Length: 610
Ligand code: SF4
Image 1 (cartoon, rainbow, N blue to C red):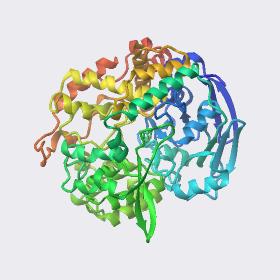
Image 2 (cartoon, rainbow, N blue to C red):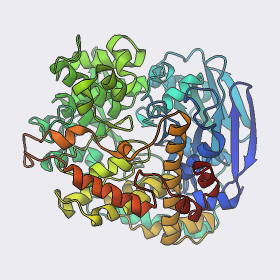
Image 3 (cartoon, rainbow, N blue to C red):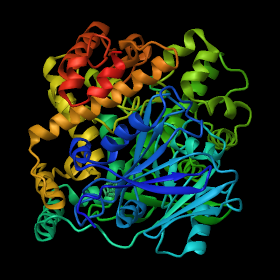
């Protein structure tokens, strides 16, 4: 098996057939793997303007050249498709043994299309693909689905699955693995549901042989040791991302009452310290020595259950909804994971509904802090019942339905609900959300930490230049390697390790210059995909697609250290234009023909500039 596997597995659910094709080494060098590869495959294989729920809309599961090797936090994969929520490029990464097992099958990526006649399970092994009846699992939550899959296939297989929300095609349903690992915020679960695909189980046989095994093991061991020696290691393992609640409160970026404020009066009750009091264990994704999957215990009808809260979930279901109770929030988190929903979008959509209720725009709505009603509403969203059915199509669509003032406080960009950092006083982070590849998500650039060091109320070119650099590394490279970015982000692992890892895994001597060009290529290709889909659906693209919600420009904060702060629109627009010029895009955010051509995307250029 080659070090950098060129094998692509194609699965057709309609005809129950599968086949393999070869990727050229040149394509792998240009796009690396993971997100780079999924963007390339979506551009090449999806018909322009396809409905996300059409059987021909492909779903891609992709690993990268570093996935699965004994390198820090390498147990990740990307799941991508055209998004039903945003109708643009959609993806998410997920930390799971399924990533390692997929690598061990020798396939670099899997392309799934078609629609099964009945609920189906796919079993992927080195011998091929089996199409199995999944009717007994249809309707089950992800927790029971996983238990049943283990009974059916044993512990050796790894599984990815959807819950009832995906089956009912809730537009922000995700793919779940290992009790709470969730990937694909922009409705990847709904696309699986539209195909009658309940689960994919994977059992590989051997890892591809790296180009230089000795060096790979040596570089990996040194990096693992550096991580363990980091001064922040112990606290990270104690609290993981949950330590960010206190940090966000201090810096006035904790989303509170539908992003009306950046501070929450009772933040201690949902903090990392509060989580530690009910924590029962910590787990890690494969090949990770800095575990951050904190599991806490809560009771359901007297029976102990576990949940996996992290910062984004707790902020969006806690302060954003006015709920100051870590046990209640963890329980809501677990219900959402079991249903197969995205926690961020669910919290945001419910926060929007609470504010719309308060303002009298939504009849029979929901009140701030009402835990029992939130629980019922989550179940209604997953089942598409009543108000839940309206919320199941996301904040953007409900705000348009309500009309008028509602769109001002609908907290989304391009249709994807904003993740958990308030930006009234953070123009760089607002730009990070505005220009993220999938809509408002922090994965591409957690710029707020750097912005705090650079000054909160400045709208400088330097910030934009740093943002592009950060997006390239986080949003393009880590997503394409595919490994978790947190060793670098949280514990400061030296980025140069990744050049060593790539050389040892693939035999290719990448330089940072080449990798940044690759990142630019990936960003421009994803942007081109959005524009192609918009035009094919009869909508014109404009720079307005990269604007944050009106709330941040016009409703100042009223509490905390940044009371009175709001974004300056002229400043934001100037930063956005500088961003476009750095990426080689025109004033509407469309990659120019010259940019696409210089990045080796001639076919894309020819299509956009026909
Ligand atoms: S740091 Fe956390 S999210 Fe990243 S691989 Fe490790 S356990 Fe998974």
